[in-house]
Length: 219
Image (cartoon, rainbow, N blue to C red; front, top):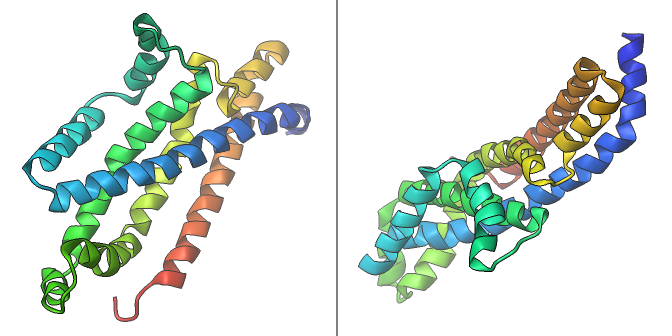
């Protein structure tokens, strides 16, 4: 136990440096993925044939291929067509697109859970379809999708660990760096696991508080 504490204390500064990159990747990806998810989710729910088909293909392709393959395409394959991306840029793009596809499905499900009569009522009082979507349907859908966002953010925090394979010095990479020098693999990776667990617990608690704050009475 004493040895673990010593290893944790000595590794802590390096692991915190890695955690900064981990959070940067996760926060950037969840935010960009949210924008993608809104656009694709609405297209899947209300889009005309072309936009619906295009968004459906996007979702199925991204969800049907591994995240690691997507990351490798952006980092290793794109230079062959003249597009070179830094490790962190390639990681953010791949994580954002992957998250966007899943968030689109969460949002689509939340939209479909809103009573269709509300859309008809909004149209009957003179709102345009777009106004009804943005002012009536989406506010309710976004509240209902919060539990799914919690899971998505937790997944993203853990998925960022694959970014070390392309050279991003995130938490897992820093753990590997420390362990390869002190050979305390058990204690170092146990420290990494504890930090991941702590971050996930904080995120879960934060989203649960937000969910309670915005919960609609009677729902």
